[in-house]
Image 1 (cartoon, rainbow, N blue to C red):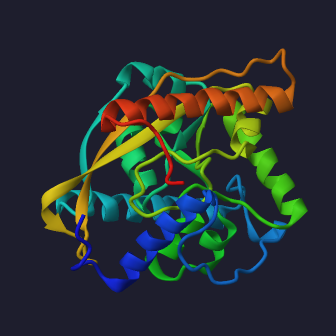
Image 2 (image 1 turned 30 degrees about the vertical axis):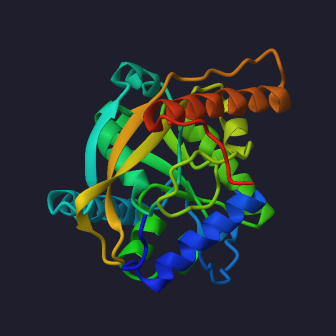
Length: 279
């Protein structure tokens, strides 16, 4: 497409995406991430055990819901629909849901489409350490309090995270992971996965429910950067269950490969082209 009227900052991101695709650097960030504070165990209350955490979480969910519903109402986020409702039952007893990561609001697009079918109506989200620590204002408040589960460089903090994830899954909750790792703005292809989230599913013996969001340009509206607004369709695909006869390493690898195969097939079905990356 013609990028003449797209802001220089967004053009730079798109050029870096093309560069990283050519070089096979699929898990690297394409936007500048400033250094972030290391999260220590006392910095995060993963299971909202404190009263203050419970209050902040409730407030953040209320504010975030109003904010994103407002964006949908104003047409700034466009959701054309959801396919695969026959697989909603997989969320009833705890699940890892995976999603491609292409925009800050993609988690809400997914949540909006499945919220009535997940246990407790809450979607827990694994997020980057820097997203938890670095963002000011409204987004920072939401990143820290909207049922988010931040990663950390600190070993003890990560142990707390893994314990919390296992507890939540055993309670029947749904946890979102981005197996591609970093966000690539408006990138449509599924990128190679990291295995970490699939290990979480294997340990808790819960299914992985793949969700793939496809996009098409809105021909009448542009965003603040001069790029066409995207129209989104959420595709829920068949759940993938752990094979407990394999052991964690092989079992998680199999979960990952079977999940990615579903993404590849859905991409090729919707976009009508083979999944190939630029050499």
